[in-house]
Amino acid sequence: MNHFELQGGELWCEGVPLVRIAEAVGTPVYVYSSATLERHFTVLRDALTGAGLKDPLIAFAVKANSNVAVLRTLARLGAGADVVSEGEIRRALAAGVPPERIVFSGVGKTDQEIAFAVETGVAEINVESEPELHAVNRVAQSLGKRATVAIRVNPDVEAGGHAKISTGKAENKFGVSFSEAERLYANASNMAGVRPAGVACHIGSQITDLAPMEAAFAKMRGLVERLKAEGLPVERLDLGGGLGVPYFNQPEPPGPDAYAAMIGRVTRGLDVQLAFEPGRMIAANAGVLIARVNHVHERPEGRKFLVLDAAMNDLLRPAMYDAYHDIRPVKPRAGEPVVYDVVGPVCETGDTFTRDRALPPMQAGDLIAFMSAGAYGAAMASEYNSRLLVPEVLVKGDDYAVVRPRPTYQDMLDRERLPDWL
Ligand SMILES: *Cc1c(COP(=O)(O)O)cnc(C)c1O
Image (tube, rainbow, N blue to C red; front, top):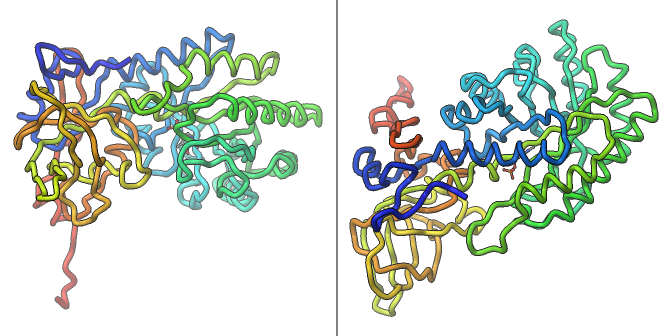
């Protein structure tokens, strides 16, 4: 459920008509709904606690939506943060996420990033390889500290979803095998600079079938039991994120209740704190990208193009993952649906949001909304083609705020330097 609905023939976000935001802030613009973010977080937490999990750590995956106002909205409800860079740690801290709720994931942490995480005192550094374990040990010792780590395991399951977002197969770059995890965990318990506190996995994104997750989590449970049997303390089991959301052209993915029930079943009686790293399921349907139709361009051979003022640099998912986004006119016109190719102005054929999409008839100047754009939308935006970085707006009830303004062209140019020999 989300809070983007038609009222009086036009699309609103909570108590604000999207037309009002588009006019005041300009387009393209991302618009997020506080109530939807809060609802998705609360529904997940209630489902997990309802399934009997005590005090789960729900660390929102910052890479899905890294806007500080979005992070603070979630942090105020008790969310932690799953981060993959020093920049994301700094964003989480700026949003008020306490260090003890920050989980640091990622395959290529630099010494500088590790040092920053150790000094910050994050809840756990998820170690993805043996060299990384040694790096954390070395860096923490040089700081006179002991870093809490979890070993990230690659459970070697096929989780479906797009190849570019599948992470849980042995061929992927993420994590270590189960046997390696046992060896590393035992080694880590003898290192002065680290304290192994748990194990972690994350098998992919936009997963719409619980079976591969259940298979992976059952294997993780086995690992925890083996470690404990060896006398190694395990405090936390981090099950990652990855639950899919409905993008409208797909079967409805399992909801939080089914997900939580499965987890309750798989982890029953295991005396560890569970951690989760959801991104998409919290943020995707809490945001839209509003764009304006620049031209309706009809080719002699019959194709009709809606040329928007938004492009692949603003919303990369269709170009990168062939992702489907529902497209809704902000003020739908009456009339028979028309089949359009919806494209942006960037000089790449890949700058095509969709082909052959039946939409209500559109005219130049009309506004459209890309639905389910709150995750991996603005966070992946760039200035490709020297287009200004897309702004972001957060709605709360009848109110809204620009939470990342559109930069000016001068801002863009001011970031660069001409060497004195030119
Ligand atoms: C991307 C990522 C997530 C979030 O994935 P979603 O599909 O958005 O839930 C969680 N954990 C790790 C380690 C990730 O890389």
